[in-house]
Length: 106
Image (tube, rainbow, N blue to C red; front, side, top):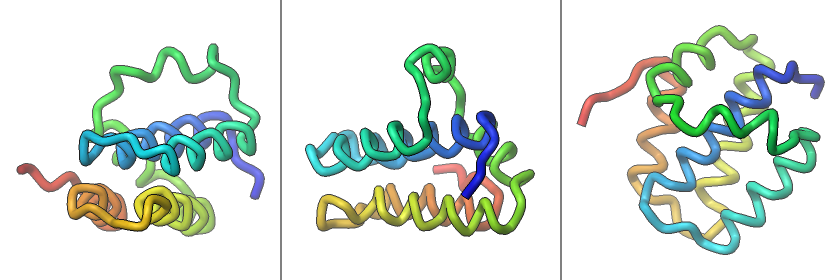
């Protein structure tokens, strides 16, 4: 799928958020993230400035994506959440927030 650099950055940052949701970074998650980083042909410089972006911004930007991009991204999100063999409820919460385009407050 052809994605803009903006779409790649938003999707990648959401993947990082899903990985960090349970406060544990499993090797399988790091490998998954590495593959996406390479597939997206991102550079550290393109991603570096995104460290402090909050989830509300990511959800709002994600809501602007086309349905095709959202469908593709959802597959990545589910892949990230399940790549370590267990889908943590906190990971699932992020995915559900994205589907509904709103952020559930804890």
